[in-house]
Image 1: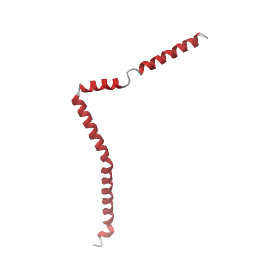
Image 2: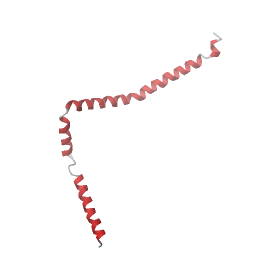
Image 3: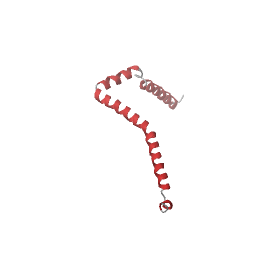
Image 4: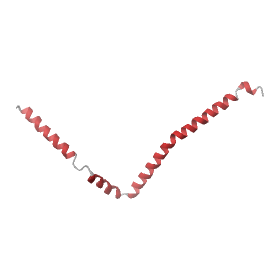
Length: 91
């Protein structure tokens, strides 16, 4: 083996160790740590959760509101077509 092959093998070993180190701490302990951090700020967490539910609810109303807007616009266009210039002179 030449020195370049030996160096690359050692580099691969370091990268595997880095992956093992990066995956350390994942699992239930991470969730418990996050919960401890969030419990230090209960009002901010409550406001965040409430605002998330409000935003999700408003997102669900968008199709209904757009449907009503389109129905109203079609009604305005249809009413404008019925009262055109040709019918005004007849009445």
